[in-house]
Image 1 (spheres, rainbow, N blue to C red):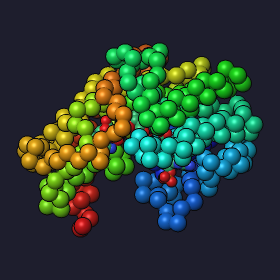
Image 2 (cartoon, rainbow, N blue to C red; image 1 turned 90 degrees about the horizontal axis):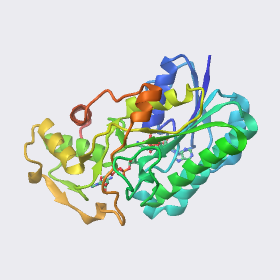
Image 3 (cartoon, rainbow, N blue to C red; image 1 turned 180 degrees about the vertical axis):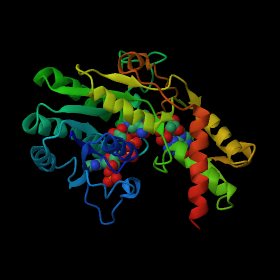
Image 4 (cartoon, rainbow, N blue to C red; image 1 turned 90 degrees about the vertical axis):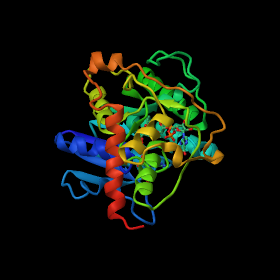
Length: 325
Ligand code: NAP
Ligand code: F7E
């Protein structure tokens, strides 16, 4: 049985990846932080799985990662843990640097010392392209990050490349464009829209307050994207890949479709601009070119943009119907 170690198992991607690997017969070890209240909501369906073990640790604590890897001796390591909310990275730039940038070095150092034969996946991001230098973006597009988060991810990306080249480790970076699901955190724009629109439909809210409706993103489905992470580690050669749908849509289009799916009609009746959601520096347009992943990994997205919006709104309508307030 193969063994996989996942940091960030309680997050959107970590929870789907753990499920995916358990279904493939892996023993899965997930790093979780100590919190005063448990936040296992996203892994509640797998928490009692006999092949899942949770290990207490934190990206800021080197020993907790090194000891975990020494004990487990995993075949595959997926470093998904990060401070992942771009807006929060201006409010907590130092913490973002500690978790999202230096945290990567900590996991790589632990691997180098404890299990250098393992395969390592780093969760790189399209936010590294920021103020884009070319359209669409591919593996060779230069980076121009526009937030402390983007800057931290560029560090994480290059330290992964550097450890691969310096120590001959099997270390890859997946440059993933935005990917969403009903498990997305409520602060990200897609889930904020799907959830608030569902609440408006059920009479729990009257308006949706948002920032910039004109920014455009290449939005895919998180379940498809965790499969791509796994495929990258099944290759003979370590390499970096862009994972994207190749389509871009504005926040406004997401809102329009969400209102239509919920049967609310014209979004302008409910939308209010609130400058508190605007960013000090915006990423206006992202669109990825996933040709390399299609050719080498035989990966492709399985659902369309409209299907993604529909899935998220329908799940939030169900969720909000079950919860009374
Ligand atoms: P997420 O839902 O925000 O999950 C982040 C995970 O990291 C959570 O499990 C969180 O634990 C954990 N974490 C944060 N700080 C930690 C620390 N100091 N020590 C240990 N664990 C810590 O993020 P996601 O959407 O699943 O994304 C997964 C990864 O992909 C992240 O690195 C993100 O930056 C990157 N990424 C995401 C996207 C996207 O569109 N989703 C695109 C490109 C790259 P708690 O539950 O305890 O908070
Ligand atoms: O913003 C605009 C906002 O926070 C998308 C993370 O997973 O993907 C994610 O980062 C856009 C931005 O995601 C609101 O200004 C308007 O232009 O959903 P988001 P993000 O910043 O693209 C990348 C690939 C990652 O790696 C990150 O970890 O939507 N927007 N109004 C708003 N955004 C939010 N959150 N809230 C609003 O009210």
